[in-house]
Length: 140
Image (tube, rainbow, N blue to C red; front, side, top):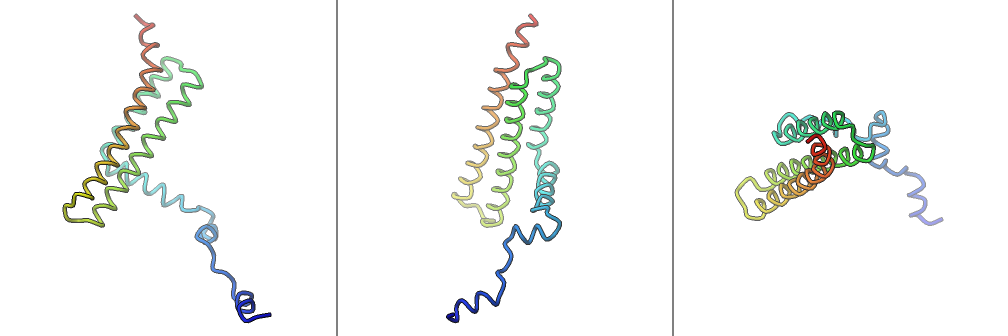
């Protein structure tokens, strides 16, 4: 047996990040994720606005007795918008850390990530209109 094989057999491989997290109770970093979500709700005004809109959609969903498919679309849109907002917030913080001075590329990165949130929010609003406008129209 050559020396390389002997060396590999005598030393155990270092644990992967997943194995290290599993060794700490199996959370796989969920506590970090929840902390990030809570931080976003505490510091990002737009997250709270999106949450308020989502709450209004849920209330309207119960009032208008939307179908299971319509609920799935609403929940999917909630996740899409919240996820995009979280990514946008993370991008903004990383850009601020990497480029504390004003820089055109930093501005572009922030504008593009904000644009991604806008696209998700607008298309989610369109889904909401498709679901709720006919139901409101039936009232008149």
